[in-house]
Image (cartoon, rainbow, N blue to C red; front, side, top):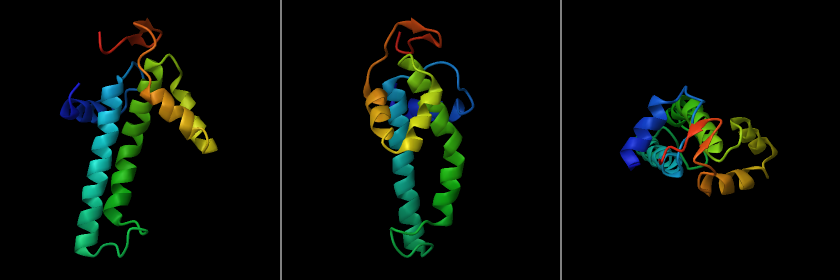
Length: 122
């Protein structure tokens, strides 16, 4: 899946918590959000909305609110691609749980088909 396809898919399927997402779809979507965040930060700093990198501007807050559900959705589908429940995202609440989640997100799909559907790459 290409960068643009993955980004569009992430936003189009933002309320779809069923099914599976490939590694490329997940990581391209994360990259897109990061690049957009950097662009928003540059705009906010150049227009004087924020004084330093430590403060958060209004555009950054709005963007974060808009992307919460698509981010949770694509992460749930990525976990389901590995054969795990999307509820495993709650590991991030323990802070240390972020590390195993990042490792899981980097691993390939576990099966050709699981209870969440067929492998998206097949």
